[in-house]
Length: 57
Image: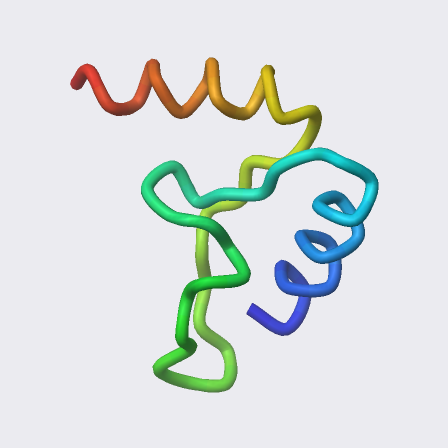
């Protein structure tokens, strides 16, 4: 989380999106210091498209 949050913040400030496939990275409350999360970041359209693929499984 301590690596994913700064990247997510920068990408979102540039107009992109950052998610773990289910929810926005910046909305995740860490449970422990070295918590691991999957990260998808990039343009909003591309992240939405990849997220939609994961929702159909």
